[in-house]
Image (cartoon, rainbow over all chains, first blue to last red; front, side, top):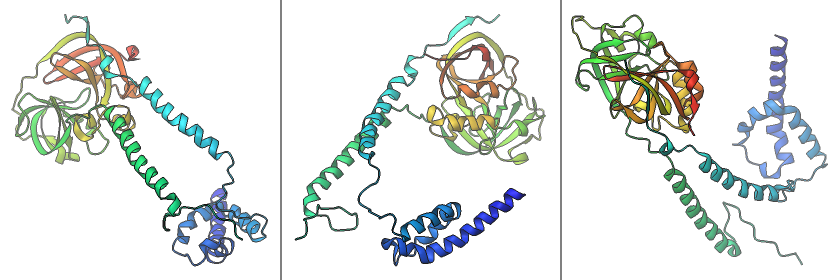
Length: 116
Length: 251
């Protein structure tokens, strides 16, 4: 019961954060979102679940402690990861084809004991 | 003076001149590469066969309850007298509950006909609309029962609803989860052998005592396996009384 109450409280707070963040906050931290409203309700379920994270990021971005640099990916290992995928995915396909059971290799039925 | 910027592509904007050839080449390559990949992948798949749902039907016949419900046809517009039909329920359920207590009785079955070559099936309507005692209990049918000996078979364990025509594919690894759901719902397991015994490659499975064998076959579904057991002909259907101890994955 206590867990249920805690869960409900968490979601109520998440709802409040979602309203304030999506109506007032989003446009302030993301210039691309300014004037765009249709997509915002889609974010409500996510905000309900991760609202502490939303508040933390909101504060960080409002204070200007982190600069949004949209076209420079922060994932520095992405290129290497892509290269690995280029090799690994075809390899998985090839190995799976090689290891796949072949119905043509099955033997015909063998009579072990004739009927009495 | 501003530093000249590299051309940058966005989907809704005008394509920069410097990127046109590159983008057109990428687009063409993607179409060709993915087309070739799709063809190569599909060309290596096993043919799903001709199994299909063939429309409404009504059958009068003698019900065999064990190991799983089978109806031996006395009269029907769509089946020949003497044909044996694997019965299943709606969705992923078998017909064990519907058939309970009707063993050996003349029944009237109503539902959808499933067909895959010489393997016949029927998806019953719910409750008594699907299966009930026939008005005339005096109709008879000779159902020959004959032992065919002990056999070692290689092939695949499938579920006796999808395989018969409810789904395509109704077999193979891609269908494993679906087959297991059907089996857990009491649909009859059917063994598809690499070769024929007494004219058929399809075997209704049971345990050595002729009882259901669902739990024992679940982990071998959709994998090519080898298994031993007695084979018995009951009317138009072969019953494979498998010895679960002898299951092994085929080489």
